[in-house]
Image (cartoon, rainbow, N blue to C red; front, side, top):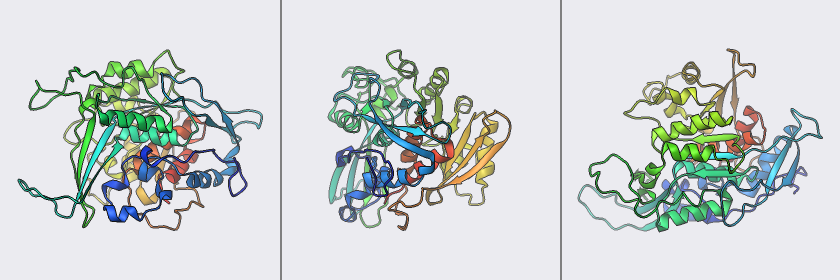
Length: 423
């Protein structure tokens, strides 16, 4: 297809509202949300990319792109219905001749899938109090699911989600959401059986229901503040053995990128990085939510090619007070290389874009620094930042898709900043 600027662009169908993740919903009162036009439904707000934003992102860096070639995706790794839509392949001219094209790889996201249950009220209840709310809504969420939807919505590579949901309506909604944007998943193992026993810690270890992970949320409509309780549920049924079998499955080509976060059990998240390294994939570790009250296994850094924290997560990883405004972000990020990170540390900085620290390709000790931001010309360029909730998920998902398409790290990070911006 051709964008309004006359350059090749990605052919992206307009995602339905139901394919969204719950970003803006958590902090915006209902009456304000009703005034937000659909064009705001890009990655950082609702988990999918608008066509207008995709055109602007593609048009902003034509020097790096010689053509957008529409191809069909390889056969899905698992049985998926409906079939995955055709993908858009990138032919890069920065590192190859016009007659050569980079092979588009597969992205595997290992992580959580939750259903958000949001109640809006003008009076937040105190302990023991009952109040009347003004509205209620449910929405698909979970960091892993958000990142998979973000990557798949770009339409440039096959995306597989490795997660667990319960045999309930919430799980059905999440899987329908995956199908609507072309996220592949293992239909046989993703939904837990009704008699599943989750080995989890809790006050009542004998009572365990394999329900889909949920996040009950109370939002104060007067100021937008919220209270959230995340109940992992089926997410904690994803075992290291499950993860290893999915990443190293012989039923699909090895993934080019493996992404994981910390909303599943730490041992399962670590296994995703280990299996990804064994498969020859680029392993991306998003340490969110950052460890609070427990120590992160040092192997997380050793098996991660790229680590992507935000500012507060970086401080927690390095043992610095999250409110320390004088903390040197670059110095803290360089500490993660000393812990074993192999290729890059990317710190997302909200309205300031992202800081990319990367080792040279020869494997030497030199670390290059690049400050990147959204490409110029996006519809949101002149608008103020309203809310950064979910922008990190959008960034991680988009970055993984661009890397699988062969873009270099600074270019991929810049485009991911654009995708994580809400026009």
